[in-house]
Length: 114
Length: 111
Image (cartoon, rainbow over all chains, first blue to last red):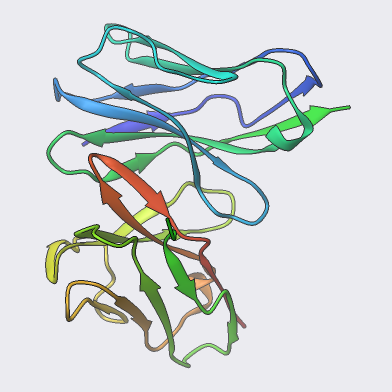
């Protein structure tokens, strides 16, 4: 079974600064996908970024980028130029290539301070 | 493109009552999921459908929860009888090309 661990329950960052959220996972599968989802108070899960395990290049999406270290089973999210609208819960998630089911971490609550 | 639609958005019921949630996935998405998210936790998969067949319902409490997707499009999740610990957000999602898209969720409070 897969596990996803987010070791930072809460974090804060000043507006316009950069912050990195940590995620580690455990799996015996060789091909899989990793995701970061954002959940604002409305509770809708919004996809931020995704990474295919077979791709060595780190995914980027505007101000969001990941540092994917496959050997270390680490998948951190970097948010640059933080904005007030980035305030939310952030969940790291794992999906096996065959199952297309998500296993989530417990989340990191990010607060962007003006 | 329309997203995943869910209703009702909010529901308050007494324990032992029943409740039903409806979901309409993104058009063309064959796979549909129901997740349960208890406050302070990440979502947990309850059931996964592929078209109108069940792929995985191993974490669905079948003594009180049921779900169906009769025509391979819309889905309904039912809880009967509800318990206090069922208070949660119920998230419906559908997937395309290994990416899962979520609806806004249905908040359930059992009192």
